[in-house]
Length: 233
Image (cartoon, rainbow, N blue to C red; front, side):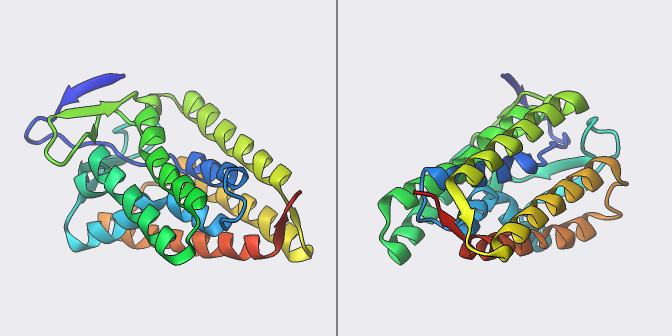
């Protein structure tokens, strides 16, 4: 793992693994069958769901710099509240406590907390050294897989396919909605990923932040899917 120090005006690239996080959400269903896929996806994507709001509030900062990496044009100037390791552990604890309070399901709460932390770990695989260990940390972490489109696709697609395969083995459709809603979800995720990878960069940072808010619709969709599927005995 590479480590680096953040010069005064260095911009950090911190875009999260997209398909990989959804793969984790799918796979986690086998560890916590009682937990909805919606909650699992929410946990696996949690810090990326918070991030665009923090951008709009001015608490974190991103710049669009085409060519900054082979895979993504996003350069994050500052994102310690959502993407520093210690902050992610704190968000995981919040998710654990909230789920325990609402559902009284210890196993599910632990799985959700682990899914939150998995986000940072997967990000550390693809990012350049830009992930802080804590707010203000001079040491930054990242393996830099985004320097290779082929390696990025291999890791993301493999994680996604394995997670989906596990979910398919763990659940079965209750009705036609449970079948078509799931496969529609998969197709939409792949299309979004392809557009992000091959399409032009966002026009502005503000437009990026507002567009990223649409991720909440994917969480709602995942809840809908799970209502129409059952756990296989």
